[in-house]
Image (cartoon, rainbow, N blue to C red; front, side, top):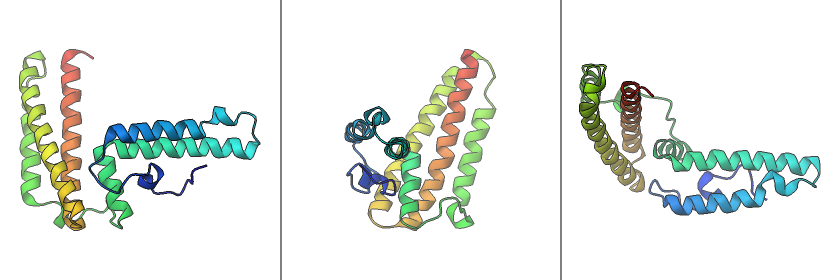
Length: 177
């Protein structure tokens, strides 16, 4: 059985990198799930049953973390000794704050009905492109060992990710979902 204290990348036998083959991750996850699924231990001791449940939970958490770019970035920084919860002024440049204010103002200025859907689509596309660019920047900085710079980019990713979720929520509201 797998160890619960294993690094998530080790758990799936992957290199510690931001750039992951998500299909490979999914394949390894499903293979590990089969190995430790609690149903496989239905006739086992209570201790082994509990261990299977714990391992399944750990696998699910690891998979969820590595599958999500924002969670994966945070995890990579964390296992490399950086506290992603701690944000200093150095992590948030004035240009980032101004850009975020402008993007949020663009979102807030849109009409609250369906007439805003086209503009929301454009804003969503713009933010999506910025998010992809920042993810590439994070990957490059992390791979080159520039962890302080990678952390700064991570905080930019957080802002963009949150804004993208708000845009999607605004679209859903206007569509009546």
